[in-house]
Length: 304
Ligand SMILES: NC(=O)c1ccc[n+]([C@@H]2O[C@H](COP(=O)([O-])OP(=O)(O)OC[C@H]3O[C@@H](n4cnc5c(N)ncnc54)[C@H](OP(=O)(O)O)[C@@H]3O)[C@@H](O)[C@H]2O)c1
Image (cartoon, rainbow, N blue to C red; front, side, top):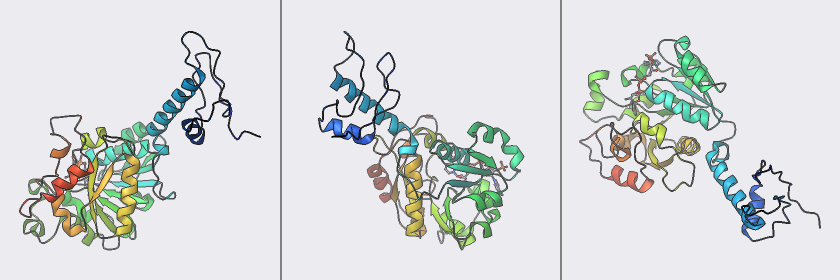
């Protein structure tokens, strides 16, 4: 019978240069003998493990390597390859770093012009380029609006028509000026942006986590200490897309409902920053979906 297995070369220490395929590992786990998968392990010495254990170690190591490699993580739609960032400050640059690490292209923009983003583009490498906000919006399969809220009306609505837009913005009246609808609770921050981007599909996200924790708490799918982020939006398809994007950059999601419900995740609510650690803690604490759900449920309408 012809074996469908592939040959694995080894160097002198016995470490495989080409990891066994996933199916080879599955076969190994079903205790099929390793001669069937054609693993060449070096002649045994005092400190080389027996062939079966060597191959099992190899599978374990290659599984761990896959989980570290974002290319193996769950995919959003295969044609969604570019993230357009309107705003490239603390949160924008952090999302861009995670997206590039997960294999996306990014187009960065800010208020001062693409030339001011040269250093960030250089740091991010060939998957990154800079443009105007309209160019970032046009290029993005998914756009991220991450500007001070006072600037939300500058976000290019025409270029974002029909697109999925993640809104990270929070309301700080001392920075943004007083916005009556937010003060009297007749709108949420997400609804404000959705009104401005009437033809886009706005999903609130990333707004409740400190940017340093967003950078440090990303984990591969299935990790025991994976963190969850709440999202809110009026379009189920857009939320699915954002869930896929977050999954790929290292986060689970908790859907809190439509944009009208995003008051539950706004500033000063229980899920705002604290579940992930304090501002003085540069590393942060993982917060799973159960923790996030509980915090969201504890929100009261007078906060946020
Ligand atoms: N910092 C956090 O940990 C955090 C966490 C969650 C949510 N948020 C919220 O997310 C938003 C961004 O926060 P951030 O901390 O990333 O702010 P930031 O560091 O001040 O960055 C803001 C970015 O927006 C750009 N920008 C400002 N006005 C613009 C305009 N009219 N058009 C295009 N780009 C414009 C800025 O560009 P220039 O520098 O060229 O002006 C800058 O790149 C805020 O609403 C904030 O409340 C922040």
